[in-house]
Image (tube, rainbow, N blue to C red; front, side):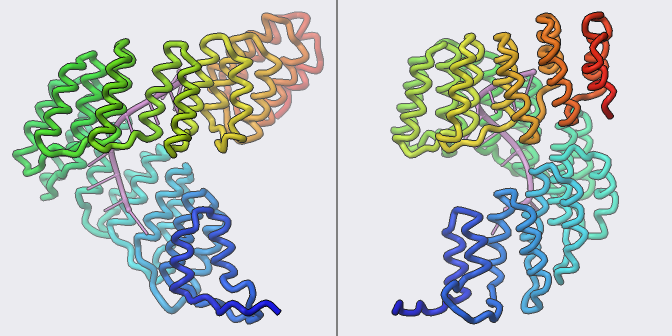
Length: 460
DNA sequence: GTAGGGTTAG
């Protein structure tokens, strides 16, 4: 007879949950902590366990399961959950572009015997920003006093929102407004503004702001420096960028992989590959581990040089060094191969992604679709299109136009009609593209006589 | 782990 395992304690469960990487296994553990036990008495989960499981499910976008746990948490009268749990849930929904879910979560916080403060309001503001719901952001901000006094974080999100819509003037207005309200700008405020100035190639103003920060009692941190370094690199001022890196060292700021990835990319773009390897060496010397972004910069560099052998070698090196290649790196290779007309190889590589433990994302599909389309491999492109629509992704409108135009040039009526069908079903075509397709059909007698195509177009 | 930076596509 198998010896009975002693039942697991809530405390032990929470530490198991913390260590469990797989969200599905975590959920099983949470729902059935004592599989051997016959006791059907419900397990008294700790608040920490709830916290862990909700975070894991949210990160994995397993929202139905997460909502189920939240429902269970609501029934627990033993404790009142901390607000941070809801802040996290709101930001998960924001990242997943589900603004209504984010709003609902915020509205229901009091049902959990938890007091809302400006923190969850800020989380919602940021989630709405990520979803591009600017009108809803405005609404929330106007009524934010119900939940607390706007703090630096609130204003920083608003500044970020202004930057997103390209209004630096608006950002400065918020910057002034926060000071009128007695809220001091902090490192994040300046980091956001400097970054935006650099994006707009307004380096001079960015550097002036870096200097002016001191008057607010804020010193430039690594993020401010990284923005400036990237800005300089973008203007081709590499030696200034390197000088800034040395200034970071002088100011005892830790150099991280972000700084180095920027420099490596810039060196490759400037055709100074050898120096890029020198930078990589320096990283090793100071104990800064290259991460996926660093390696991706190298992969991108090699792809631009059409040196795919080296690009693939970097992938191997990543695996060797224990750095998991990510979807961005794979997308770079797919795009690079397509650009060189090697779209069959790109497709083979794309199909190999699952085996390599990577799920293709919307960029992977779009890149491959565009590549096949450019190579006139319309049949293959159509297969990719169907698959991406099935996955809930959509091609860029310009890609569809180009693709349909190619089919039209080839007089490939059959594929034209079946693609229209897919596009209609997937509901991924905007009105302009649809109009263009109709026009193309009508212009072509041979095609317009085909009732099959007309039927497709008439479809609701 | 309420907010800001680095790699891809556009």
